[in-house]
Image (cartoon, rainbow, N blue to C red; front, top):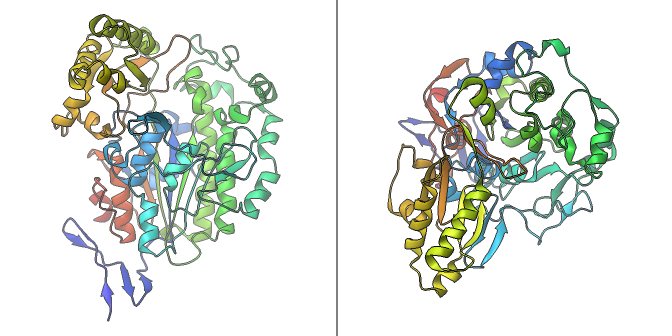
Length: 546
């Protein structure tokens, strides 16, 4: 007796998967592989800004032949790689997938926890501790997890990234492999959570010592210096540069490595980090027989744009432009490899951003007289502590402040017999008086109210009752946080690019607002599978009804 698995999406049916007596039959128009190309710090302006300098095989190929979602956003309060990658891969918000930040306070265990660190698992591929990671704190399944479930484990699911957080949350729980760059050894590694026996092909790649070879050369401009007219002049006054002193081309890679104490971490801030990810991906695909059968496979490749040093140079910098011109070449090589090996109609590619990037506040203010400014969280929290000491008595009232979230000391509050909701409201009211803060919302307000579609919706999207802070903060548009000596990893820009390519995709554009949560149900529609019940995004119908 045949059992048919029919998928229905908003008034149309696509019975693409048929489960018959334990065997899976696939429609001919199902892509053999889905490849997500994801870029950290990907401002939508970059495509137009650098368009004339790109080659015709990378960004230009995707945008000239693909379907563009030109008004695409992450509607999360915290625009961080951890939060957004979990959102992108699960198709739902932090309120459900639980990754509200890089770290949070576990109230039950009464300790600070990291979103991916897991000492139960060991590093695969090196002797470092950089592989003690897992996706166990991710509370909902990813698209890859769902694909594994539907195909009874036959689909292959992989992620490859420069950073561990991106690799782990892109892979999810059931992936065949998640690989990332080990900044202590210069090798590509994984976790025993995913890969117990590091494969020979990956060992062979690490044996090439590509990271060391890149430190043997200088970072010079990809094109003639005079052609970088889209950027601020090299060594712009506001650029602090590497270690506060190197801010102009060429860069001596060996010198940068020495000044960083011998760490390979600095490589992630140069174009060579992205090239390593591209090369490793091309090595992985044939060795893992990715896309070799009719059961669709899923791969997520995550590139980084200057990684943590982007704030030392800025989004208008020559360094950022050179990174994107070289990344364009890497993407072109990856696309050529995929199309030559599988054919355009057998692959479904989407290109999107993991985070966007804001233009520097001082540049906006001085150059264009826009309303912008710098907010010092350390000073604000220090004043808040003094205020709470005056109001409630001397005590350690704040347990943790991290990335727009304040965690109050619940044990101290209970000991002093203070109403939790009262002190939450007090803290929010105090912070709302600061210039640069648009809203400070107490947890009780977020739990009690509903903010659909408005400026406060990101608060609700990012709030998880078990993991979020007592007070969440949103800065004014144009304002950026900065500690006394260091920049803070922050952007107020929720918009990122999204373009689809391959598998019958025709050229087109929609200006309708789409959300990062929409990618999972849309890919699921192409594959003819039902997304997990936790998914809150919607199918991008313009792509399907073409």
